[in-house]
Amino acid sequence: MSGKQVLAWAMIIVGFGLAGYLLYAGLSQYSLADIVQSVQAIPTANLAMALIYAAGSYLFLTFFDWAGVLYVGGRLGYPKIALASFLALSIGQSVGLAGLSSGAIRYRYYAHWGLDAEAVAKIVLLSGVTVGLGLAVLGGVVMILNPADTAGVLRLSETMVVAIGIGLLLASLLYVVLAATVRAPLKIWKWTFGMPTWRIAVMQIVVGTINFALVSACLREVMAASADVSYLKAATAFVLANVAILITHAPGGLGVLEVTVRHVMGDQASIGALVAFRVIYFLIPLAIGLPFSLVTEAVFRARKGSSDSDASNGSAA
Image (tube, rainbow, N blue to C red; front, top):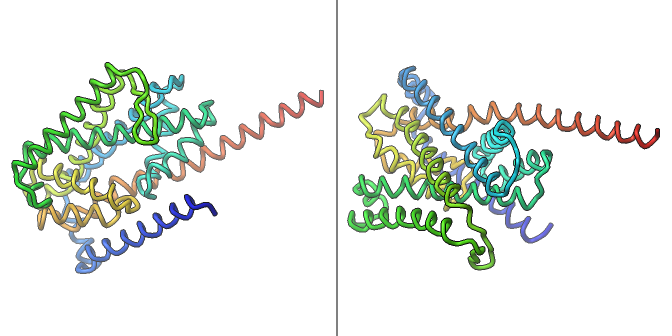
C-alpha cells in the first residue's frame, strides 16, 4: 500500500471516528422517543417545502458538472451530465471525502461516455471551485447582513466579520476578472490551472450560490416549525457548518453539521429539525442514488459484454 493510500485510509478512519464522537455528543442527551416526537412536531407542509428546496439544490448541483463539461470542451448531453452528477453526489455527500468518492463515480460514467481521466479530473476540480465560490458568495452576504452571529461563533468583532464578508465577495469578483483577462494557465504552488471563460466563471458563481441558498432554505424550513428562525440566521449556521465540515472532513458532515448548527442556533435548532434535515438532504438522495447506480452499472456491463461479443463474432467471421 502506497503512502497516499495509507494517508487516505487514515483520514477516513479519523473522519468516521470524529463524526461518531460528535454525533454521540450531540444526541446522547436525547432518547429515541424524544427524537421521534421532535420530528413528528414538524408540520407536513414544512417537510414538503424542505423536500422541494433539497430537490432544487440537487438540480443546481447538476449545473456544477455542466460547467465542468463545458470547461473541458466535452460534448455530452445534459441528461447524461445530470445522471452522473446526481448519482455521484447523492452517494459522495453521504459517504464523505466527496471530492474523492464522487470523483470516482463521475469517472466511471464520464469514461464510459468517452471522456479521458484528465478531462474528468478537470470537471471534478472545477466543481470544487464552484463549491468554494458559492460558499464564498453566500458567506460574504450573510457576514455583511448578519455579522452578529458569525462574530459570536468566531469570537471576532462585527467590523472584522463584515470586512471578511466584503473580502469574500471581492475574491469572487476577482475570479471573474481573471477569467475574462487571463488566458495563460495560472500556477499555484505545484498546480497549474487554466482559467475558464468569464461566462463559465459567472455561471459557477450563480449556480454555486443558488445551490447553497436552497440548502439553507431547506434547513430553515425544518426549523421554522418550532422557532421563529430568520433565513439569514439559518444561512449563517449552514455556511459556518460547511466551513467546519471542510476542515474536519467528517463523512457527510455527520456530527459536525449538527453540532455547528446547534452551536449557532441554540435551542432554535431542535433535534427533530436536525434529524429531519439529515434525512431529507442526505439519506433520501442516497436511498435513490445507490440503487440507480447499481442499475446503471449493470446496464454498462451488459452493453460492454454485448459489444465485446459482437467484436469477437466479427473477428471470427
